[in-house]
Image (tube, rainbow, N blue to C red; front, top):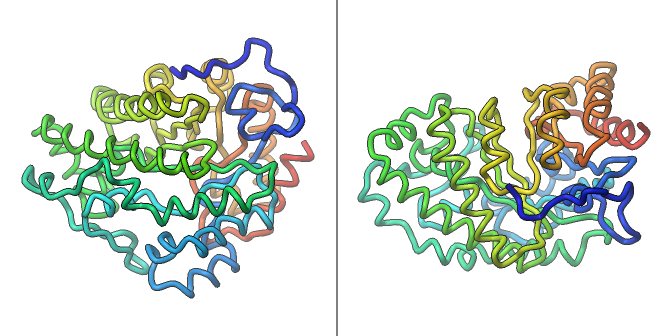
Length: 358
């Protein structure tokens, strides 16, 4: 587990000048929990769509610091979230490793898929990933200077298993057959790919921290595709490797793990991944989380994005249930996954107002 142990008697409110989000990640309690949302900068906002239309593709937006900084700031201006998350994408790490990555309108990401051991030898030096992604780190630096003093800045990367699935499948997948087959049939070879991604991720996140990131989130979006034994080997252990190496050089930077759809594997992850907080998807049952997870680590989550899309009484009831169950411990209000592009912006306004009123 984390080496940043929560205080046995955490203060009820942050110290003057402290950031609510960071206070929660360090085990602190507060009457009104901090709130931010995954994909809070995105296509549901008209101001985002305007900036996106001015770019020559999605990666152009990610690699243009002024524009990436602007879209990161848009939801902060509109909603006053307690944290901003760098606008980028988890697939910039395969790009930094020299793999062909492109985003096709209406289809999503497409990669030049890895097919055999020889393909691993063609990848670039993973220790140089931070240098290759200097434009993204420039965005972090600009954000660090531009954000309100009370707003924390989150850096992020994809966790190794999830990034590996894209590199092998060549894009999104429903069943991950190619990635799972490689891991099962040639585990030593697959382990070398995971090690390359760990190395590149540590380089990249270290550069983000040096540029001003105050917390890190590791997104293991496809963790739920693995059985228990594979989960420990390809999710928990690589997350731990990244956390340990980052903490050796940046001991005060909190790390959030997000093993989406982990199910019962969540408990092994909490004990073994070395993260300081865990982000929960909407499938996690609230009373169980309150009694078994929150006493060990601060939790983040876990509103269903469809409830936010729906709005009205359904949204209010979902917010109230989360607050009733989790607001008594160290907690950050968030979604169980990212905001859906069809979500009306006024529903986000209602969410923020209700969390802060309760």
